[in-house]
Amino acid sequence: MSDFPWVTIIIAASVLLILALGFSWLLRRKALERDRISSMSPVDRAAHDARVNADRAAREAQSQLRRAEQQALSEARAAHRSALREYKQRVSIAEKEHRRESNLVASELKRAQHQMKEAELTGRKSVQSYRGRDGAAELFQHQISIKGQTFPLGPDVNATVDSSGNLARTKRSTLTRMTAGGIVLGPVGIIAGGMMQKKKVHDDRELYLLLEGHSFAALITCNPDQGAAVRRFATNVNNTARNVDTANSTHEEAVKVASVNLTNVRAHTEDVTPVIDAKLALVKADNARLKETEEKLASLSHQLKNDEPSAVLD
Image (tube, rainbow, N blue to C red):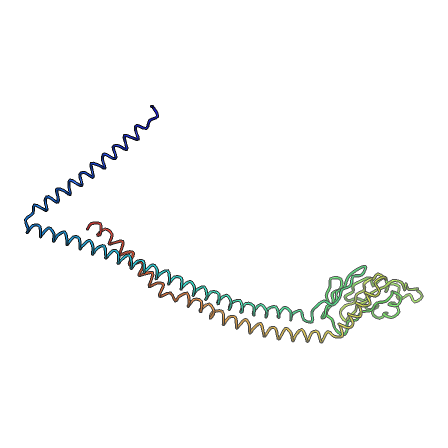
């Protein structure tokens, strides 16, 4: 018995009793009102009916006004959504067109810059490199780098591959100049030191690469097994040196053409970019319909909100 929900039953019964009393009171009040109205004189009854009809008409008018305001607000919201959707679509299309035109301009400028880089390399590319026992040389179309030092190519530049004995016999004047001073690179003393000894038997087994010009002379000791490679390098040096004027002219012409093109493209970019930006800005600024629907929606919302207290008071 202790688990029986007496409290719940008592509360439920109390609530039902209160509801029943309230309903009875309402029925009693309506009955009294009917008795009061039926006891009125014809004049008072007519006045009472007129007031009731006027109140009913006022409430109906207020209800119609509220429905009209709600309908107007719903239409304003729909118009604003439509205007916003249309505005976003126009801006999206304009932004895509802006990106497309901007990318075209950027691509054109990038191509012109790439052309300029290619022009700067025209006539300046590496032809071949060679590494000997005591140093390396790299040949370019316009210069030669020997043991870390760089010299311009010209008709005066010459490369010879031979043994120490042959070099001592055929390049006596060059070796003499090298030992006398100037820019000297390499083991010149190995050859020149015994060059003046006419009775000395020179070693014909050792192989050397002799590189010379007006402003430099260099000697690189070669591995005899690399004879074919070093002779190919020497041939390239001699051929490239003879053609260096053509390489320089080609380089200058390519740089000139690319420079003019790059200048024109940069000027075009500076002219076109503001126009492209202005087109997008114009589309974004064209929002009159959107603002109009926003203002109308805000006005109707404010009006409906202000009308609510008066409707409750009535």
